[in-house]
Length: 242
Ligand SMILES: C[S@@+](CC[C@H](N)C(=O)[O-])C[C@H]1O[C@@H](n2cnc3c(N)ncnc32)[C@H](O)[C@@H]1O
Image (cartoon, rainbow, N blue to C red; front, side, top):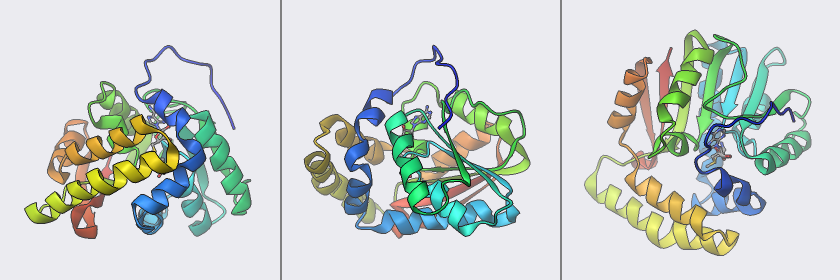
C-alpha cells in the first residue's frame, strides 16, 4: 500500500471509517440481502465500457469494486484503489491477493479531496457507496468533485453507484422504513458501531434524489449525465462525462 505525506486537510467521517472494517463486508451482505455484490458488478461493467485503460476506484474501502473490475478487465488496464482508511486498504489488499489480482491493483492511502495523480490521468473514476459520504452534508463536496474532474481525461467518465431515492412515494416510504427498522439495528448489532450505522441509515434516508445528484454534477462541470435505477430506485448508477 502506498502512502503520501499526511495532510492538514480536515477529514469528515475519517474516524468512523477506521473503526468499521472488521465486520464491514459481512454487514454489507446482510443489510443489502446480498444485492450489493451484484450491484458492484454492474458498476464494474459500466466502468469498463468505452475500453477504459486507466481506472480509479475512489473510496475503495475493502476493494470490492476494484477487484470486480480487475477480474473483468484485460491485463493492459491499470487499476488503482484509493481510500483514506488504512484498515480498509489493508483488508482490500488481502482480498485482492486472495482473488488472484493482488499484483494488478495498486492500493493508495490518500484523500479524495487531494488526489495524488496528474491532470487527465484516468479514463474512468468509479465510486461505490462512497459518493454519499463525500457529498451529503460534507463541506468538502465541491473539492472532491473538482478533483475527480481534474484527474479525468476529457471524455472520461465518473461512474457512481450509490443509494438513492425511489421515485414512487410508497416504495420510498418502505425503503426508508427498511433503513430504520432493519439496516440500522442489524448494522449496530453485527458491528457494535452505533455511530456508523446510525449515520448510514440517516444519511441514506435524507440523501439526494437522482435529479439533485444530476444538478450537483452539472454544477461541478460534468456533462451528459445518465442514470440507471436499481431495485425500484433504492440505489442507482450515475454516469457523468468530463
Ligand atoms: C461506505 S464505504 C464504501 C467502500 C467501498 N467503495 C464499497 O463499495 O464497499 C465509503 C468509503 O469511502 C472512504 N472515504 C470517505 N471519505 C473519503 C475521502 N475523503 N477520501 C478517501 N476515502 C474516503 C471511506 O474510508 C470508506 O472506505
